[in-house]
Length: 412
Ligand code: KDG
Ligand code: MG
Image (tube, rainbow, N blue to C red; front, side, top):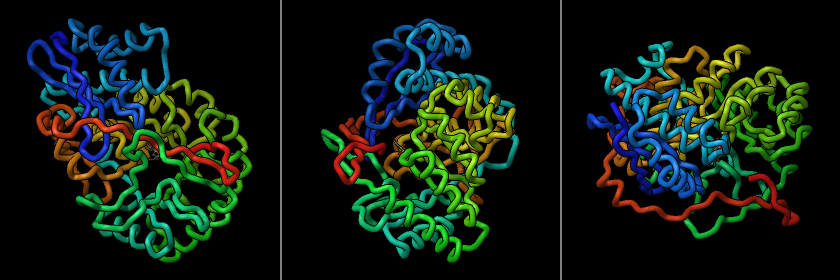
């Protein structure tokens, strides 16, 4: 069974997505997600100009060999653009293999290790009443774990906080946080770490007071703190028993996590901007983190992330795959298949896609009892509607840029 075509489809049903469609000589079709938020066209070009021509005529079943061919064979290995492109090819080939086998993908990955994959939703509010409403809405929708992001007095907009309250989770017009804004250049936000550190512990105290001990609470510091600030935050949040504290320091300085780890027992998650197993080499071996965050979409697909998770398992480190709306329903479906199969699954991020997005991609995984279960259809369980996709052309959109109060650029 040879690869006959590889087509890149860019669609924007509310936000931009890049999807790779691979078609075999027998007419079997597989999809992979190659969306890189704010840099979509660079992955599309990488795939269209440099990868698709090399795929035509290759054995569609040779997933590992194709992975190595694109990774080692490209010489310029690693990096988000390369690894998103490889991820899309890998995911589409797994989709095809499972369809040919007539099995849902998780069956090829070892079969089910659990009934469903625990997920966490995104609760946020600019103040406590709005945040409480958002947490309550998530619990009513069936979530058992929520990420809590809060406004900070004195700051106009803060990462992770939706700007307006409207309908409920997952519904059209719902309020949710979509950081990439459609515009020709990035919006600018301002940031004050001291104000943030003063405010956040009081918010978790209030949320625990209101919602009790049972619900799993998570928080994303989004790479903004120095090691000692991060250590202080982890320590101050210990009484509120977080499931994890995410991305406390910029991910490229891995030694920072050693400092944080020595000061706090709050579990740490990192890696949504990591692309390969090499990025985790020291963090995992030195047991400086508890959860690895790479999504299938940005870390070389199912093949790349499974390698990361097998390595992480040696040290009891679990999965916490990145799942914001900029990971498409194809990337999410792949994560849920892998998550159901691997032993060291931890939790899956689940920021519900808009109805328009779901109409285009046709995902068939199912949310119930606080968890996702993959589709039982052969393959990933995606029904991509190309005609509908074509009705939503690409629009430039960028993640914001962050500045400190003195005007200097800070990590966003
Ligand atoms: O594109 C950037 C987003 O994916 C990122 O800001 C979301 O940090 C994020 C998260 O944890 O979902
Ligand atoms: Mg994050």
